[in-house]
Each structure stands twice: as structure tokens, then as C-alpha cells.
Length: 539
Image 1: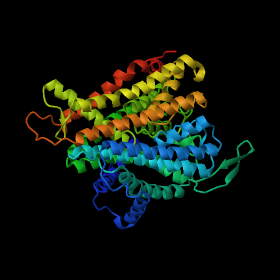
Image 2: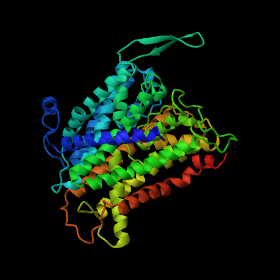
Image 3: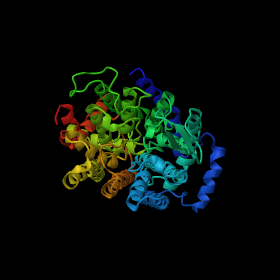
Image 4: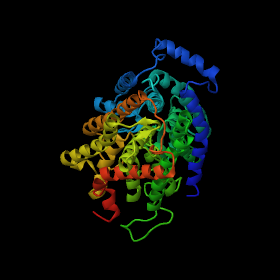
């Protein structure tokens, strides 16, 4: 914990100036380096023939988002198919990366540097920009009264030009200095400890790794992801990658507080994220030092499947960050984790908002806030409202859709796979069940990590997981943009004694309770077949 708490603290400290910067950028105010970025944005605006200049309602915003993502998906699919992937694998990979999921059913280093850059790294920027844009569209919906959410193309360009590209460039320079390769070809021939020669492919690794974590993507250049020494060569890069994954998800609530003129409200959202994340990470770490199935317990943690350059606890914390943040990158084998860590990782993906992926996690958190406001209002007989906007049945129907679609996309394909493809999991019993469920949980939560005990390199999993990935990304995203559209047409009402305050400790505890209870109601029964059964000694 002495190592881990400073990582969280550093991410929080860095999130303050970044949050202020994001608030300036997406409020249309003059931001630092304006003279450098403005000409680039104007040139891109001319290429778009001015489509980024007019304000959009929620339907225009959602259609623009879907259209651009579909175009980028088609480009990536064509590149990956031309690079030698089968149609089903190219479908899964392009779908996975365009949605910020980055689930990989292939070994990363089998692709050429050109395919890694033009398809995968490109989609890492685009998917992160899509998620961040959706978050600020939702923020504008809470604050607007004219039905307009801004312009998706303008948000997308600003996010890439002013946030992701300069941020990723600076991080890539640091990564190169730390020993991560950045080259356009060749390989490194090394002599192994057995005396044999091995050829290790090189490529633009540092540039991919920088946006991989800054944009909470998670797909690795190499098959071993951040357990590979060329992706994560030292304890320093390990710390940097954890901070990067937390940085933008922590900064968006801060930016929201500034834009709404209610910093305490932004703080409540951030604290709710922190409480659940830190609690979940602590429980995962505690579980790596004991095992109910073994007579001996090890205070240094179990090292099987863990990255030996780091401790078992650093590897476990890496998994905690990348499942609660929905990044999906790992520095060890998920299959080798103790059942406590598997349960914690699944819980992070189930809640999706603690703090969740860039933009999308904040969207889900606001959905839970609207649900909490509605329930609390019914309980105490007060009008449910948030930031002066009444929360009415139309919004609650969409809130219910966002909440219910996730367990459907996990439980139905898990049950189907157990019926039609029961031998897909290589391990028996609860661990095998967890491997199957983890695949679809990771897919529908836009996380991307996976348990290696699942034989998922088949057309069955490529197509089914790909469909779950796309549905799990775009149905909630469009629903949340629609919620923003409904709220953006409402005029705020004055706060009265009957108004439920949402920026105090009482509401904070209520919000945390709602998030945990909803997750337990939807997933606790099925968890008893997997990590809970294993934790309690079931076979």
C-alpha cells in the first residue's frame, strides 16, 4: 500500500491541471498553446467542409459519432484483412479497437509495424476521442437549455489535436528514454539462456504504449502486453503506465465541476469513484497473499504467472487499475490470479464507472447519479432533479436501458457458450466458468483483458465477442447522448427546501450504495458459479 497510494495521489494531483485544461478546451475558451493548435484545427475543418461548425442536437451528435466510427472501422478492417487476418478475426479486432475495448484474439507482434500504426494506433486515438467527446456532450446537456450538445466533429478534433496527440507525444518521448523501442522495422536477435537464438520483432512500440494508457485502450504491441519487457521495461514505466490509465478518468469529474460551476459536485463524483476503486484494489491485493486451497500462505504473494521484475502485488494492482478503469492492459497472467483478484477485476468491469474508461466511465457515473436522484426522490417524496433539471420517466427509461444492457450482454453469451461450446475453457470447475464469463464481461464492458485459459481464437468467439463489444459500446453511448438531449431542452428550476442536495456526504454514501447494490443484484448470482465458488473452496 505504501507503493500504491502515492500512484493514486500522483494521478489525482496531475488530474487537477488537466481537468482545468479540459474545461477550457471543451467550453470553447482560449486555452494554452492556442496559436499552435488553431491552424491545425482550421485545416481539418476545411477537410470536413465545415461540418464541425454548427451546433448539433442529440440525434445529429449520435449519428455523426456512429458514422465516423463506422468509417474508421471499415478502414481498419481493410488494413487488417490485407495484413493476413481472417475475415472473422479482422472483424473482431477492428470492432474491438474502434470501441476502446482492444480485446486481442491474436498475438500483437504478429502484425507488421505498418498495420500496428495505421489500424490499431489510429483507432486508439479515435476511440479515446469518441469517449471523451461523449462525456462533454453529456455535460453540456446538463447545462444547456436550447437542445444543443455542441458539435461532435469539433469535439473529436479538439480532443485529438489539443489533448491526446500532444499528451501521447510527450509520454512516448519519456517511454523511449526508459527503453521502450520506437522504430519502423527490423528485429533484435538475442541469445537465450538455453544457448539458442531468438528474433524479437521491434516496431513503433513507444507511440502505441503512450496512447494505449493515456486513452485507456489496453491492446498490447506484443502478445504478453505490459508483461513484455519491451512494453514495460522497468518499475518506473510500470508506475507511469498506472498513472496514465487513471489520469483522464480522474480529470473529467474535475472538469465537470468547473464547467457546471459546482466544484463540490465534481468532487463528490470523484470521491465515489475513488472509494470503490481503492476498496476493490485493496481486497484484490489482500487476496494475493493467501489461498484457501493451499496449506501455506505467502506474505510476498504468489508469483506464478506474475511478472518477476515486479512484485505479485504490483502485478495485481496493475490488473485492478486496468479493470476498474476499463483499460485492459495487464502485466501478468489474469488466469494465474487468486480468486479474490479475479472477483475484484470482474467487479470493476461490472460497475464500469469507478472510474471507468475515458469519457464512457463518467457517462455511466452520471447515469447512476440520475438513478440515485430518482430513487431518493421517491423515497423521501421530493422532486427528483439534478443540477436544476427534473429527472422524468423518459430519462429513466434510457437510464434503465444503460443499466440492463450490460448484464444481458454478459449473461446470455456466457450461458450460450456453456451450452454449445462447453470445452472452450481449458480449466475445469469454477475457474473454467470464470474464463468464459470473463471473456464476455471484458467485451461488453469495453475492457479487453482476458483469461488465457479460454480457447477464444475461433470464429465462434471472434464473431460473438465482436457483436457483444459493438453492442456494449454503442447502445449505452447513444442512450446517454439521448439522455443529454432530453435534459438539454429543460430549463433549470430554482432550488427549494424540497430540492434533494447532491453535493454532500449523505448523497455520496447513497450513490456508492446504489452502484454496489445494482452490481450485486445483476451479477452476484452468477459469480457464485465462478470466483466466489472458488474462493469458498468449491470445485
